[in-house]
Image (cartoon, rainbow, N blue to C red):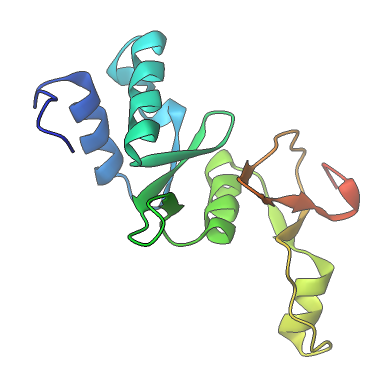
Length: 143
């Protein structure tokens, strides 16, 4: 973090709270009590610009680090696990897609390439980052 920000500023306090949270996914509602909605939006926008966070959905952010090779923010723990953690944080029940299930059971040797899940609850959100997107099996948003 740059020295131009004051230690007692809201941005620094929000960053401290985010670092204290377990897991790599941060929901906006977890830090909403720290200020007005407008202040929180500004802080989140600045943290995204600094490379501390990346936005993966509406009100869903993932902790990030800057790649030393490309100087772009990358998600800690990987994009696939962050997307599934986001579903867990939102309280949406899911199970792995049929291709992943067959691979894990040893019925198939093809490694699943895309992150596909089968939902058990209704979910109308789009969770994505850059070119990666969480896909719901058979384009069904609920069981």
